[in-house]
Length: 511
Image 1 (cartoon, rainbow, N blue to C red):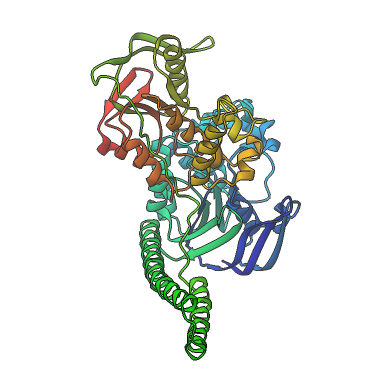
Image 2: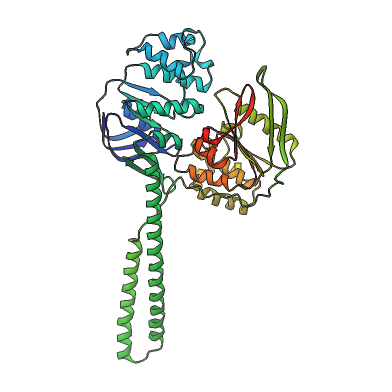
């Protein structure tokens, strides 16, 4: 279906390599996942696979590609602007270069719970919710004549029911599927080949890995390899330090003898011995340069909530009784009953448009007015809290104190931020880096209550286990809106579903 030889991709803006010497064969029926941190070039590589012209305005590349397909379908992260002004009728029944299978169109609409009578609506696509925009693209693109599917973050705006449907579709379709995803559960269910794009050594060096494995095997093998290399590198350094210590004692002994020897013949022998000692030092320097490199992973998140003073376990954080969830003039849920205690970890799920984010925002505003303690908050839309013109250092420091600045810089370095990035505008950071900033702010503020809206959506799948561990170890209360099934199962004590009838607790086994 597709063959790539020795591809290197470089971003023209800063001449940063995104992909290095990638060679790859994609066979018919393969399910290929592109993974990596935000900003590492996954979307650019996906587009390049379709057509070089889609990225040539900002990407330099060397290498060859052979495409053995005629038609492809592409669903991007966001609805293209050229489609926003179309009506549903124009979108589904307008001119098309490819044949549409109308039987499949209606079948997919039914399976995705999208009313097929709306196909002929005059409603603009721009007026649809994020989940509906993705659903109509799935319905349309999967019904077209196509050889290969390209999907960029298809799980981002889908509710759990639709996400599970898409998993089954990818598992069962004979078509080749190449997709970008951060969702671990989705990857485990679908991927048969992994392309991992990394930027290591403070994001200065691109590393590209290809493995024909399912995601669970890839992730475990990667972690095992990291631990083996780390153990070997540490053992070699320990042994090298022992040799240096022995050599240092010999050096000191010879120096002492040189200073206290006055016999000319003995002096020549001691000088010869000193020459041998100095030669050995040069050999040790060469040995140090040849030691196994300490492994690095850009997705490592070394953060800990060390200073949390938990509130009493049964202290109510908030209690809603017959609460009307309303946005503007629209009542989303007439009556919500909800009690949230000081050491509970609660997840909220629901269909697209049910009001999950709105409920979390309203609870956040109420707690800001009522609570005597600080509230940690991670919105789904990061600009709600982040000033795009400020630097990470500005965002995280509250005084010009040099000690505080160094402490923050040390934390940022542990999250793979360079000192330059710490002083660049936040607007220049990737979504994953901005998410790390919000995490770090919550850690530094040591708030006993955290409100999180899709907290894992911009972290790479390989960093998500560390994010989950951070929240598992948190001693306070967490209220999280999420469709990340692994997060809900591992972090949350309870999970509630929000619909028009309010909040209903569900068993985690149902996720």
